[in-house]
Amino acid sequence: MKSPSFERKVPEGDSMERSVCRECHFIHYDNPKIIAGVVPMLGDKVLLCVRAIEPRVGYWTVPAGFLEIGESPEEGAARESIEEANADVEVGDLIGVYTIRHIGQVQMFYRGRMRSESFSAGPESQRVELFDWADIPWDDLAFPTIKWALRDFEANRERDAAVPGTRAVGPAPGGKLPLV
Image 1 (tube, rainbow, N blue to C red):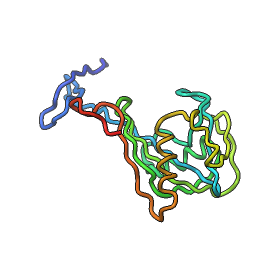
Image 2 (image 1 turned 30 degrees about the horizontal axis):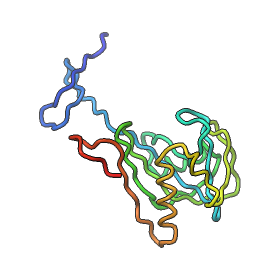
Image 3 (image 1 turned 90 degrees about the horizontal axis):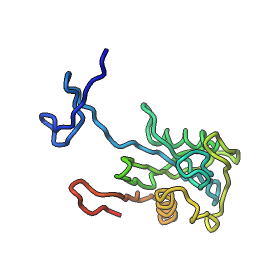
Image 4 (image 1 turned 120 degrees about the vertical axis):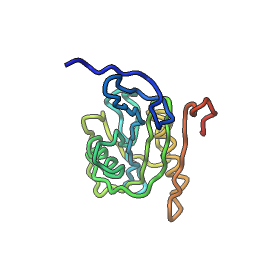
């Protein structure tokens, strides 16, 4: 069986250029990937992980990763805390949604409460550590979105209900300036 041949065009009834199979007219939708993460707290301390995988090996992050088919963002955030930190985390309110246009990602971060003091490095982490807020290694965070989520978490920490933050990085469609 031969591989299908795709062309880039605007399908009938659509407004965006897509990859369309020349033979069967199947439309391949190349949509952003969703990242789900959690800021896990144990009392007043935040749990951070040192990345053991690319990109950004050796830098600090919160548990986060690609959402799987069939799971909610909250379930994905809880799963990532187990995979990366062997930490049982109760996922709470949304901290913020961060759009990274140039790599096609939408990242969602949640507040989290560790259900126990038990944690250890999972296969994607070199080590895991609890930090007082003042001791977070801000200059060694893996990605800008981690810094944004932590800052948005802190900005809303004293409110009864979190007001989710939003940020977008990269050129908007039509070359418009990004929202940052």
